[in-house]
Figure 1 (spheres, rainbow, N blue to C red):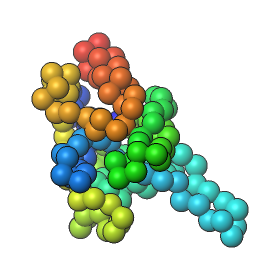
Figure 2: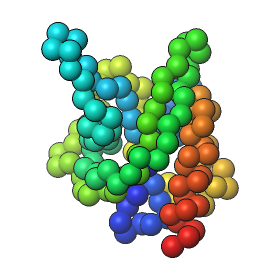
Figure 3: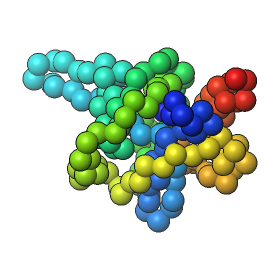
Length: 146
């Protein structure tokens, strides 16, 4: 959950076209693993890298929030577990040309306000089970309790 230091009521999400469904979700992805070296990046390093790759920004990680399940839209018999961190936007990556990962659906970074989310004007990806509760809890605690 990436917050902007100048837009306290907003978080950065990505808008994806998932097989015709417009879905909003936080940037994220898989941990890089080197099976030959028996090494893997930690969750924080993965989060920093995925945010840079998907939306072209630098962030700090401020805290671990929670986790949720993601059911794959193209195969609902597969599920991944996502770790959610609170982070702060630090700046844009110069000359970012968009996500170069060919395995990704087209994405568009978008700053979304707490009002848009809480009023359900913006709908979070329904295959991300538990994400809505984490986002709403984070927004209520960090936007409305300041």
